[in-house]
Amino acid sequence: DVSIMLFTRDLRIRDNPALAAACRAERVVPLFVFDDAILNGRFAAPNRVRFLLDCLADLRASLRGLGGDLVVRRGDPVAHTARIAEQTGARTVTLADERSAFGARRLAALRRLRLDVSAHPGVTVVPPGALLPSNGDHYRVFSPYWRAWEAARWRPVADTPARISLPDGVDPGPLPRLEDLTSGPLSPCLPPGGERAGRERMERWLRTDAAAYEETRDDLAADRTSRLSPYLKFGCISPLELANAAGGAYRRQLAWRDFHHQVMAAFPELPRRDYRPRGRRWNLERDVLDAWCEGATGVPVVDAGMRQLHREGFMHNRARLITASFLTRTLGVDWREGLAHFGDWLVDGDVADNAGNWQWGAGTGNATRPDQVMNPLRQAAKYDRSGDYVRTYVPELADVPAPHVRHPWTLPDEARRSIAYPPPIIDLT
Ligand code: FAD
Image 1 (cartoon, rainbow, N blue to C red):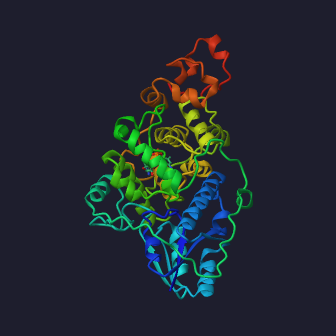
Image 2: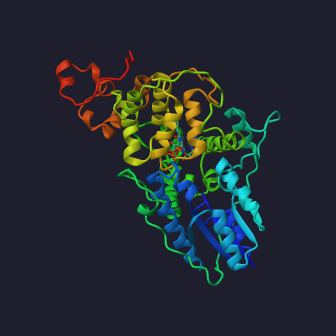
Image 3: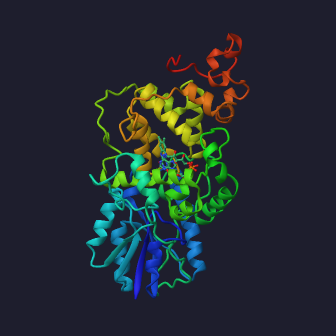
């Protein structure tokens, strides 16, 4: 018998329950389809597509190592699945259970084919919907979710397939080039994609920085968080495997990820509508938004965050919090503008995590203190004491000593005039 394993955002061979289930058949077609509906929309940001191509090249190499291959197509994943089933006589399809609105529609369309379709866990540690409060269809506040999450029993780790054999006559097809899929600016310093790169980073981080995570996670200049988010986004590493290996403070962050995914599953409007309607009037001045996007607000810690985003396709979590609060609460710009800009650049850009965090940052989501405004100067004094985070990403300020590097407008006149850095867009004093 023949199974089709439709890879989506679970691009790994280890602890992949959908792949393990497919491998119970004698022959397996590991399939990835570049979905035109994604490629033609804003979600196909070049930074992510580039990372995705690395992931697929690595996955193909792993599958070839097992005797199989990765079959690559472009178009509609449902139509390609149907065609390959017809060609090979496959009766079953397995895939990862993905509960975004997009994933849910794709699964529903697959289920209309005359095939046995099964969706398996693996995108999150605890699947959306597995934990339910006594009075609702999902958890709206994090703390009770976290308590339930910690107490939950997790699934066992799935077996890695020992061997895969492809049915005869299936052409694997070439991997497209980046230029064939998308166009637009790429960040110059991107991490390599793929399961192998992800595991290397995971193993190194667990050995070196994991033990000090709780104390160092907010230190902007130390840069000692795991930077595993892109690998989790594309499923190069298993969140369950990571949760099993990591300590409590880190697990809590993985639980935040699961939390947003279960909110998104229950409230698919998360990227578009206020989760907690606030009836605010937003600031529509284009110049203000542009200054924020470009990292030219004149507030060093904010500009450093935005420029890190453009340079690396990544931003430290503390800087994401500061820049999001600054945009939505200090400048009063609609959180959806910030969401879109982050989505254009982040390699880890994920609909549920990005939208859930933006709503939290804007006070329209699950935040328990929705009116609290973060003062970027106080944040910088606390989390970038030395000023090195700013100096790394804002070269105009590379020679400015602390504390002025955090507020260069307090420099003596002459020194201030000698640096090519704008005055702050808003009075913070
Ligand atoms: P670590 O500190 O090492 O954390 C480990 C893992 O836990 C991360 O890789 C991530 O998978 C998960 N995690 C940590 N914090 C969060 C969180 N608040 N929400 C969800 N998951 C979390 N994360 C994304 O993965 N994709 C996004 O699109 C995204 N957008 C964000 C937008 C804003 C405005 C904010 C404030 C946060 C956003 N985050 C997003 C969450 C967080 O900033 C990143 O996950 C984290 O910075 C990634 O770095 P790391 O892997 O070194 O994190």
